[in-house]
Length: 100
View 1 (tube, rainbow, N blue to C red):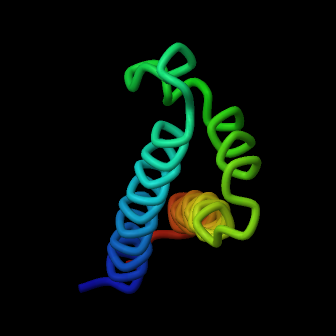
View 2: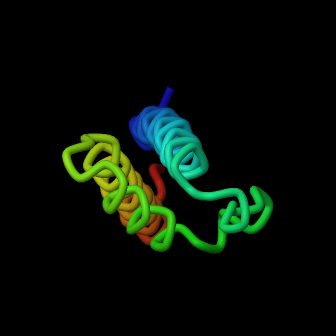
């Protein structure tokens, strides 16, 4: 298997795992905010995806020493870095000379 394919697949697998971890952390954040919010200020879950920063800010107010926000931001940052790495590597292989 060519090096580019192996590199792409390995980074893609890491990216998928990071996205899964970020989704799990976000579900934990939403659950913690929902437990502390009064009934009239509950966040409707389909709209929670648009309020990422609001959910993180509320979770920080309710749980100031929670590590979930740090892990969430870390996984998001690593996922963005991994995605950028995939884009750079694929562009490098796309514009390099093909093997003869």
